Length: 134
Image (cartoon, rainbow, N blue to C red; front, side, top):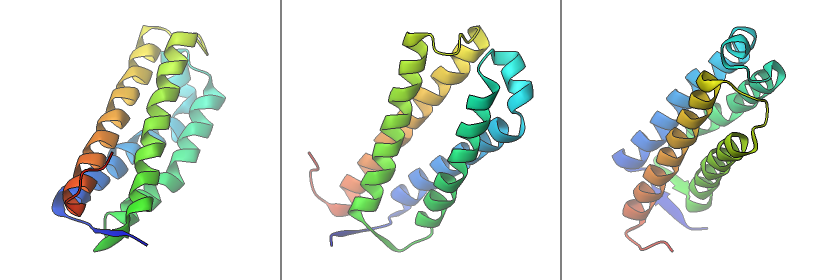
């Protein structure tokens, strides 16, 4: 199994992802009713996505504390971020949930943020392994 050292850059990328995703998860899970009223996004969607993010946050936060990680584990995090970003874009272009302008902005900010996390993690993994990752 190929491992990578958790460099300060990779640790930062994972930690930022865990922190921002954690705040978002708590906001969506605990404040789904209020957030749904403001954004016109479905309350159940907000609640379930928020609850679903909590294990992800715990795993990514734990990963940030390791000295080394399997490269595949980091790739799973990168893939999860890319998929989340794609899902957010799909929501916006499909009109799913009929969000208002604030709801569209809420989803768009998430799409951009997780895409940036995926990029930072990919760059950090590439630097940590000293290899070009295609």
